[in-house]
Image (cartoon, rainbow, N blue to C red; front, side, top):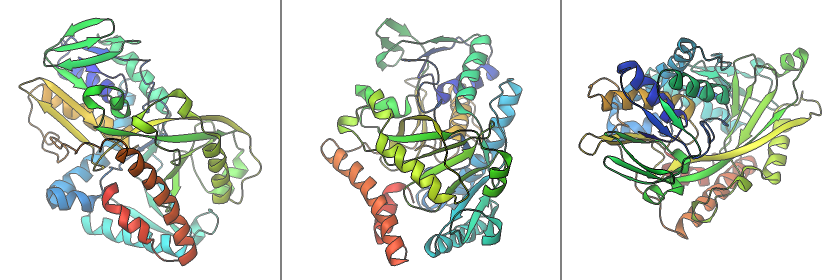
Length: 420
């Protein structure tokens, strides 16, 4: 029994079917498969993990941190391989990520990032000089090949189709109320199962049992009209490439298969009581800010029609550390806490959960995120105050760096709270 029809649940179903085609697998989904962040994210299938390598090393030791990094890098290719194997056309192109350094503070941080990656010896980062990039005021960029551009809705809907064709049952429009070992209660009745996988990610906050396990943080996106080849040449972004810059308040973009810019970022506030509502998916102030940020990033952009606007919640654990858990006694497992890095991490979670459920001890089941349990978020009003203060702090940190031309003291103070 899998609770949640997003990528975590569907990859778990897919991998369980590979290990034992005779298994009876049921997926319960409140809306439709892929309704949440799995179907409406930025399309980065990256090797990013919410906790930095240094943070993983401090918590778990160097070898465990390196194993996690290798697994994440390998997963970028695994998603493309698995999608091709399943016949899912999701516009997967492994073109890498360009992170622009747009001032001296960001440039020095970029150099430190490359040096740090070289010291660990897993991630092959390149430091690009200014003459190789096209972003406004860029001193240079960090480039990594360990990222693919894809269309998330095509991936998750395609995966849902494949697991159904292979015998799984997906029950959409089914609300899970609670669960205990062997039993899941829904608004349509009670279901019994030996194994239960909880894969709700940001929507964990809507269920009493997991309400404080993650904080639902909204991220919003826009997509432009298709751009012609000349403009793309001036931007210096090729098919399959994703892009960002070194600011503290996260932004992310990609060149889509039909030559649009899909561009998103944080900035929408956290809502009292971890409330999730369709009304929060669209915030005009944030959409205007994203459009202005895009034009500030690329001087070569003409006036553009913004043809699509959307958003949704992602799941943030208290320590910014994603996890996979499974208790063989109770038969209950879970995975999540991806902080927006889930397009690849969900696949790794699905493979890991499949190994744990079928009782196979593998390199995946020994990774340091297996068995990790993040602390619960504070009750309200502390959660509301802390989450929105953090958002304001990252905005202030970027302003501080522009004014002082030095690394932000605010960002340094916030780093331990954001997995770095």
